[in-house]
Amino acid sequence: MIVLYTDFGSTDIYVGQVKGVLAEWAPGVAVVDLAHDLPPFGVRPAAHLLDALARRFPADAVFCCVVDPGVGGPRRGAVLEADGRWYVGPDNGLLSVVGARSALRRTFRIDWRPAHLSNSFHGRDLFAPMCAWIAAGPFPADKLVPTDGLDVQFGPDDSPTIIHIDHYGNALTGLRAGAIDAEAGSALEVAGRRLMPARVFADVPPGALFWYENSLGLVEVAAREGSARASLGLVVGMPVRMVRPGEGAGP
Image (cartoon, rainbow, N blue to C red; front, side, top):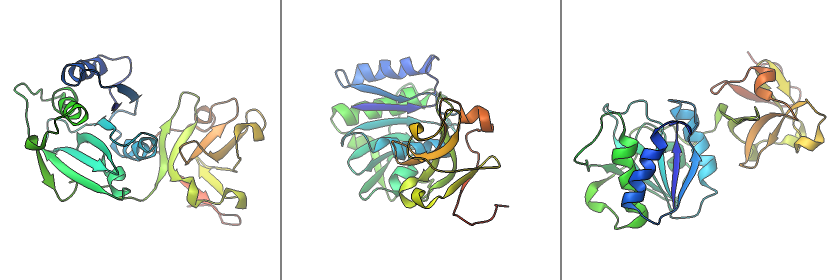
């Protein structure tokens, strides 16, 4: 299985070109479109979202990850094996949260170059063939150089920011909810408002704003039958803060 995770846009011309390469080099291998409308150039939020999403995929899945504003520059191409899954993409931090939170990992630098490599489309020309070989075999050991780690690393810590907004207007944050005691009444501070927790949408009245633990285990800002984005003016990258009961306002 090859999983595509990009900021190429689902209605633009780029995803189809990548799929054409995959069909040539890995015929018969399933290709899953995980995301193509990630915020353009948003490497850090995409890195945190990737970690949350990838854990729902089976071992041996190969992720073709391209959020690459530095394409054509000095950043390297990387392959990461983390807890049995494979990730191929630019070494710009995009793969680093997955790597930092994995128990078992190996990293490689992509040394291979195709005969025709576009300066601006490594997703098609470099990363897609590499994903195809890893998924369909034989493993391209002759095209990779083992490394001690990724060049750019964001680390394992949570990101106290909004990392994704879905088409409903709900905003996913980079905070993992498992470390937060919602039952104790911890509020989420965002856009100058404090939102109280709820278990699910059905537990609040229509239009109410709240936060909850979503299906990925992340803290999410939501509105029942409404748009939290529209109500609060939310954008990706906006900071959020958990506030314990009795704690004063933030700076």
